[in-house]
Length: 311
Ligand SMILES: [Zn+2]
Ligand SMILES: [Zn+2]
Image (cartoon, rainbow, N blue to C red; front, side):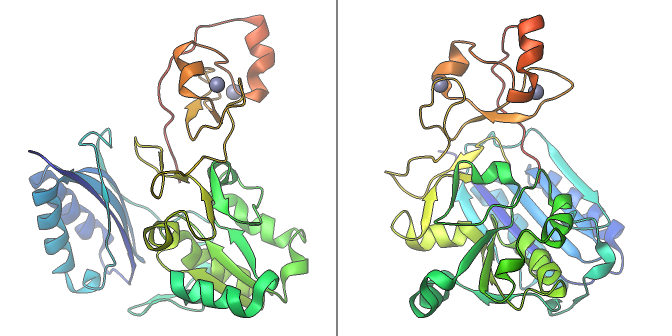
């Protein structure tokens, strides 16, 4: 029987020749029939790939045999065997595009000047000590938080990671500048950068959730401070931490709870919005809120394609 696995990891470390690393990673993935998405920059690697468990293990072993990546913290999850449309391995100016590559310094010890790392247990300890003073700050795109988030989290108004700098400079969060702030994101990588940007802008006590929501969910499931579903950037689109998790998202058409995003049927829009499987199957409500005017003018049947994620 075939067993599919997905691995998610990142390493912040200086790479002298990102293009050489790209060629090597591409060849390695091809040899093991892996698909997924890998970004490489002068500051390291960010990868989400999946395939047969035997192949994925080989890939991980070889990747970690490269000295700069030996400390990679690999997060494993179950795949379906058809989680990614293709293999994409690219060199980019930033591993995560905050739009400010020169603000962050990366050494062999990782990102310099970031928030204090808290594992899931340490996060609970901080909550025990500081209680309601602690502010959860969502480091993802606002859309991702629609289906799941930490209790009472602050959700910045972000369509992409590029929007964060303007958000934290807007003054909207200045009341939290002297409070304990815990940033969190899917696997931790966005907080590595976001926590530096926040500290540089006067937020005094910044923590980052080490290993992200993925690790927290593995540790505490649905019994902790996390509510709902986790948005993920592959065909699964969402995951839950055990049974009994109800998505915080609501279908735009019928208001039933759903973790399912679909793309707006307008080809020039493609904005993602929540629509439950029943409404998708029935072809209801093919357009996002901003395009409903267009829907009235030119009704087109809804293609029931799953949405494509983007960090
Ligand atoms: Zn519905
Ligand atoms: Zn639209």
